[in-house]
Amino acid sequence: MAHQRDVPIRAQRDVPLRAQRDVPLRAQRDVPLRAQRDVLNDELLDCAVSLARQAGELIRRGQPQAGRGVAVKSTPTDVVTELDLASERLLVGELTRRRPGDAVLGEEGAAREGTTGVRWVLDPIDGTVNYLYGLPWYAVSVAAEVDGVVDVGVVFCPETAELFRAVRGGGAWLGPRRLQCSAESTLGQALVSTGFGYDAARRREQAAVAAALLPRIRDLRRLGSAALDLCQLAAGRVDAHYERGLSYWDHAAGALIAAEAGATVGGLRGAPAGTDCLVAAGPALFRTLRAALEELIPA
Image (cartoon, rainbow, N blue to C red; front, side, top):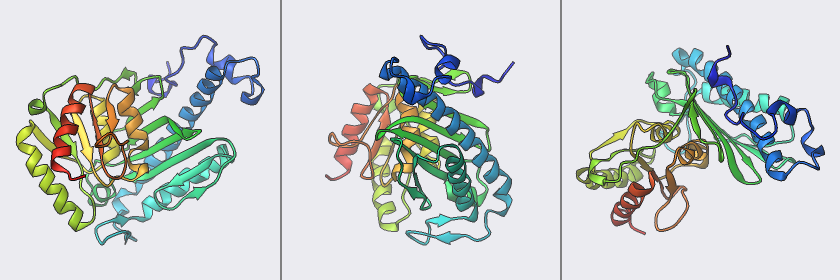
């Protein structure tokens, strides 16, 4: 029997999946657009899972040599390893082979235009500092946009072999288990995760916010990978996550997984989640946490 984690999550269709795939997408003139989108998303999910697993195995094997060839980016503490670059090369190379018409955006500089309406958003190692130090909390994050909307997200942690996945409208999954975020609604009982940026001045501000928030919540966790933090929220292992300074590739896949597990994902003061702030929690807790953060973070 095949492992359930390898089975696409959108297998229950009015039209059998195999039959849908046997018909070229562009030729399905008599198939509703929604069904066409579902077929495409199944294909993208299968591709994303394969990509994440391949890149994850590459970086897991290479971790003992992670300290070789380390460079810095935005600040002296913002590091990139040779394995970050190798992982992104693998991801882009596989996409070039499998889906040459798709656009690509990668953390380490990969960028190309596409012709299909699909764009891949890649974080080859989310949690690079953890990876460099041998801490087992890092991941490969792969998201696929369709016409500018993230429809597919996969986050794979090589050290635990946990693969989180979601397709828009199809729920969030970890292996055969459908994920559901916490129903906690009381801020004082909430276990909240967060992250800090690489710039020293920004970290000082983030630490001040965390210190002011800490007495209002159950406790705070800072684990070092936003992609995995959002997946822990989806799995109910924390009640909420907030973070400032994230790049799009940090949260593109994880935010979809959290949302498909029932979480509300947004920013402050009605803004969408972005570099300024990302807040994610179950709907009732989201409102309370966002209000608290709006008090602590100036507009």
